[in-house]
Every structure is written in C-alpha cells, then in structure tokens.
Image (cartoon, rainbow, N blue to C red; front, side, top):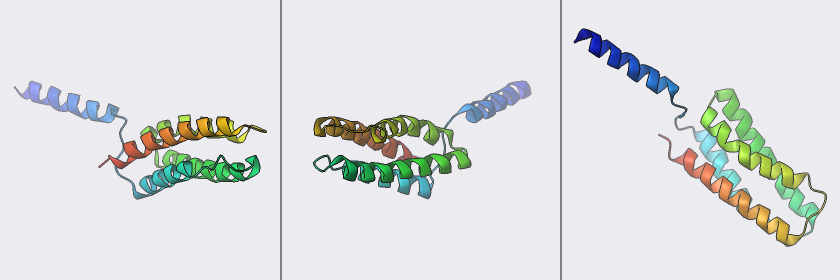
Length: 124
C-alpha cells in the first residue's frame, strides 16, 4: 500500500511538471489585449506608410510580450506569439501591398490576436 501511494505521488508530480501551462500574469494579459485592440485598429484605407506605422507599433508590442514571456519562462505564451509575430513581420517587410491584401492580413492578425488573448485571459 505504501509503495502504491509513493508511486502515485511520484506519477502526479512528474505529470504536473510535464505540463506546459503558466498562471495568470497581469502584464501578459494587458499586453495581449493591447495587441488585440491594435490589430482591430489597423486601417487599410490609408496609404501604406501610415499603415506601416500602425504595424510597427503592433510589432513592438508583440516583441515586448515575447521578450517578457521568454524572460519569465512562460513557454506556452511564447509559443502562442510565434504565429502572430511571423504574420506581422511578413506584413511589415513588404514594400507595397493592395488594400485587399491589407484587409486579408488584418483579418488573420485579428484572429491570431483573439485566440492568443483568450488563451492568456482564461489562465488562473
């Protein structure tokens, strides 16, 4: 009986250590919502240089969240940032784009930021 309890305790402890879930963090939650709001405010009906200013600000906030999460060692948040970071970097590095392309990319970024924000907000 004693061995069973010890084995169960050891199994539970190793199982918990294997989880890649972090807990609530005010800074991550704030920045995730900030990113989502900025994504929704991307204006594709202006010239590309003004849109690029919005994208660079969004890119900065994503980089801030990634750096903060890496420093804090919250791997789950860092992994969620990778897709949106790639989408924004690709968008920013384009020399020119049409309003239709901008709207498609904006919708992708909005969806990625929505998923990321929801995942960060439901932690406890």
